[in-house]
Image (cartoon, rainbow over all chains, first blue to last red; front, side):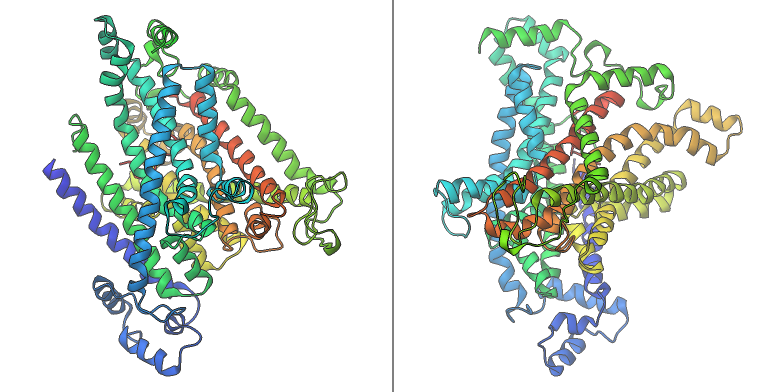
Length: 306
Length: 325
């Protein structure tokens, strides 16, 4: 386990470096002068000259990259072109908002998904099974923004129960979280069903039944525990993907998170903001995937990492 | 817990479990199945046609394809023709799906949009395959440092959520329909490279490959005759699922203003303007969205059915791909 931990952490480093290279090259690959791109059209020639000197844009690319890395390491992403304030100041509250949204969404997704998966697996090929699985597949086939708009139409426009967007109260959180949760819930339900079915067909479950245990006992004590291991992995991966989904959800509901920050930045050509948002997004994803791997080894002692 | 539950699970114990393969859950390594044999093909076809969801998906896709191919030829309405006198009309006999915020006929736009969405799906998946498959073969074949470096690049690409990676590519290339296709293709490429490399590595140890080698088969022959056929089932399944995913991703880019640009009737692009009229004219939002859901659902049903038919062992792995090791 310890060796695996070290190995896995060692793999994280090149990944993070790779992400930083992509983010670094991002602005330089866009046609145009990176100094002008990073300072914005409204920057004075002095601003541009200052930026060029500060980031060493006349230096070799490798040196520029190292400079970029050391700035980023200190939390310096430059100034936002749109607001002129340091990007890092805008970043922190937005990360908090996105984490709140994604954490709520994953709790909803796991609850819905696992319950649906169990309901389906306990009566395979029944109406309940077909119904929940069609719902689950529809969930993974629906664009997130459309789910959001349909919920908005029902709960904000027609019923007027919930605010159509914004941030601050639990009521504001409800619709975006459900919107973001729906896709993951579908994935989790499918995984829960298939792994529970597999476990229910295994020898040790047959033994448990043969010795006269009640159905409820067999399912909750014996089957579920093993069946949920792959579900946890899938849920973790979905949590990582939620950063992608939050880009859409936050745009629909004007939720002030990292995703809407990225899109505002892109549309306003605010490249320092774009760089920071992409870096945060990819790092989040890499870290969550690492945690999922570690958790997997932790809850299932049968797994040995070679 | 009711007795019916008990019954159904007891029944599943006595019969070979249809879901997990039950008694038939063979330990045959995937690679040595005689994939090319006519017996295997017939049984795959039988498994597929018995699956109602899969056949439903296939039928819906044929309908969609026909609509995309011939719809624009049959319809005489121009999907970009504006009529400001007929803005935001509800569905009627004159305009089956109503009109949008510029008075354009929504039915014509949805039909033409189908052509765009299907092309996006096909082009980006082909692009992903064209780049990803050779990369996987190269990585597995050369091994060593080549493999290490290629797989590291693939890992780094996989450490971006798909949509984020596509957004990064579009940022560099500029927002347009074609760049969206390229971006999505690039974002999907690592999945294919992983699949091919995995199959190739498992094949390398197989006896029939060693036998072929001993008989003097060239590397090229082994790749074409043995590796590619063995990769086909997972590749076909993934291609179907990823076509659906590509359509969604393109709609996301369009919705965010980073994909097809107005007045293109791409479904996501239509929604990005239409959402402003959610309150007064919800049909502008509901109809293009429903079109996306229906087509993606068809590809997913087809992919699920293909998986069961071609490769029962892969069951339940839908969307698990990313981050698997």
